[in-house]
Length: 453
Ligand SMILES: *Cc1c(COP(=O)(O)O)cnc(C)c1O
Image (cartoon, rainbow, N blue to C red; front, side, top):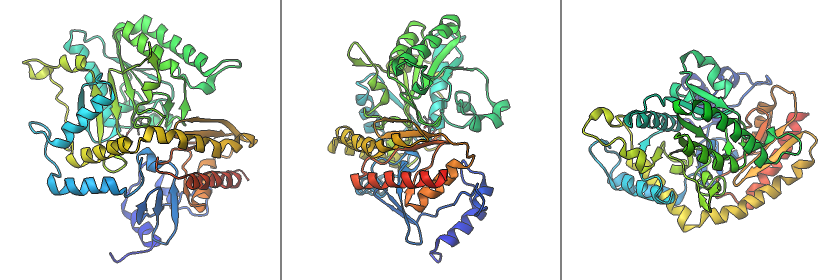
């Protein structure tokens, strides 16, 4: 190996690696308020990340919302080692294999059979683009090519490739590339409960946002292919949470106007909000609503390997069956359906079943809420909120460097907590223990006071 200290890896990384979502100059400006430390990680174990100098960090955001059951999880490791010795990869066009078949069957079963086919890619943004293309192509195949526009919500985030940016409404990711982005997506009001006027409940805000959707569909429905939403929590917007009533009404309105509902469960799926899929919390006649298309990624492989999946209804799938190749969905990626990634996902689903994770998370989420509850008394904390294993609050400050200062102060307290703007949030791995939740709460308290002083 040769090199073994943080300092060595810092210098080499800064010289050779272009890090994502980062102004690289900020990594080099120690001492400035904009400074962002680069943290070399030697190994991970459970909820902890360890650097080369003996320091450790509790992963309070599941390494960008991917890691559900800890780093170097023994059960996922064992499954991957076995898969590695059996089949590392085979192209999925013309070939199939056990992990991809089993994963597709199990995911379909988790939707109650409503979404019967699974299409595979490697990252979330590709899943978004696949869902948009499938919806558009479906309408063309059934003789309605005029249905070619998309709807998304204010503050929506569905990925950063040029196609996915069309339905993403986060200025820092979109503005620089606006001339490249197709303008056919219309942005509708978000049901974010924080937009409530005095006396309005979260369900009232949801109904008001749904009324705007209804009005748009009444006027333009025949041109709309699909509405894409992040169910219950708009993550990159700063953990904007909303009432399931919006999803219930959106499902009904989409049915009425023959528009696909795409649920982007990339961040909120896999148990994060308290049910396996977030959209299940919206019900019609006692049954969970179902989207026409659903995107999964991030947590589905346990945070191990790049994997994304688009699940679709059998109706949608059937519209592509024909003698004509042009009516087929000709999308592909080299690593589509990679056996190692699918095996990691199967091992992840096994843990959900064997440990009854959804039920166990209910107690854990209560504990998380209790640990953060004292923050309501903090004079600069606003909108402390929680949905399952996501907790967030906004900080009222005009310090333009708040998020970096908080981030640095949290690292100093052995915690990885990376605010989005002035929103501080926790999205910990599900294996987190109560003492570790207490550690995060204490780090938040200290970092908050340091960043606001
Ligand atoms: C992360 C995310 C994406 C994009 O996934 P990538 O793998 O980063 O391309 C899309 N939608 C949502 C809701 C996400 O949280």
